[in-house]
Length: 123
Image (cartoon, rainbow, N blue to C red):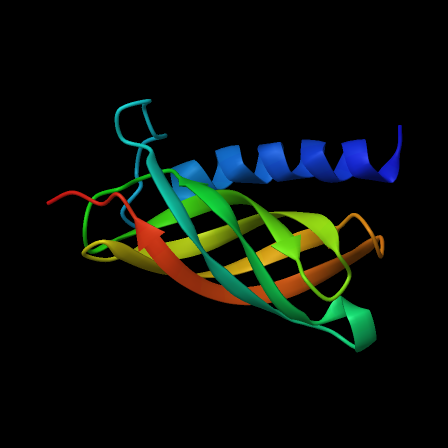
């Protein structure tokens, strides 16, 4: 099994776990509850492992003023590569903030990022 497939498998498993244990998401998300968003993340690291990333996310809950798990795919500008990520988010009125862990496919490193952006939240 390659490192990439292990990272995706771990991401899917953690996403399922987060859906059940993050405050505000006491039950796993149903298809109608999931939110979609776009935004920016600042990735922490050294050299080409750090910097700005932009991408899309799926949230386990899109209700306003709730926390949610997130699964995303970013483009990391410094390394010019894709960065699948998994995080915990706060969904507000049309926006979100999150903390996420990602796997940079280009540099083959696991990293940490903080981000925010727009989400299709609801009241």
